[in-house]
Image 1 (tube, helix red, strand yellow):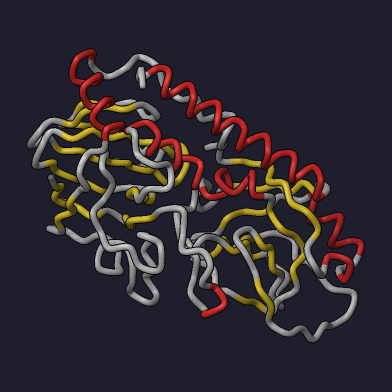
Image 2 (cartoon, rainbow, N blue to C red):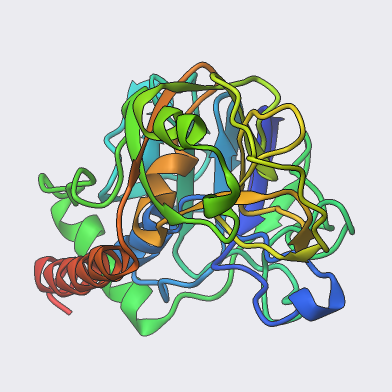
Length: 329
């Protein structure tokens, strides 16, 4: 089974949970920007939640299916249609042979996730299907999709086949997974963070501005990092820092004082002062902000951040059980 790319859109890549364990060799983690949406999309079609999916950014991707195919779309609302008819996100559906799936412009959020029953049949490189575009490895030939590409799917598992048979028999379900407890698609968001390694080296006025003034996501933002525009933040004195490990959500302050939040395709190490670290539970929401979105930061404790993460993982477990119940596994 396969799908043909009629229009690649702005940026569509194969991603999964990421290429972990290789940062010591300078290999980026990559992976889905919004892993919550990725995991739910996979669960809805009966895949392992870590399976590779397509991450569609902002607009324009158009696909044509060569066989009847079970899919699920989650994440941002990109006004998706099948043969010109709008389809709802966050539930499984079957796309018939020859049908055209089109993603329009994002009206909520920034990235949609398309899971395909059986998974996307690309090579696993260093334990991941994620596309590492800088090095040209992983995903589909190490790059974003292009017009006239053809993607193949893996064979259906028993779980995929059960969902497929159910949807064929009873039609697209009238229920959907609610996304609001997992991610926000709002254009103005409050993002929570803990203090970064160099937080105490910033002056008091900057610490106050960080949690009281809005910051706007600039068009120069991408999968590597979000560049923010707003009140500049300053150190009490110049620091000479060695480069050290950074991670998804690290908030660095370069010499111009404007924050940069490192994202999925971040470098493995950085040398700018780190004023904060976005909590893992908010990374999905952060990944859904578009250029010109407005962010407010809220500082919380490490213990609170852990509780928020545990709560979301518990919610994922409940959603997984709920999906299995709905699909009569």
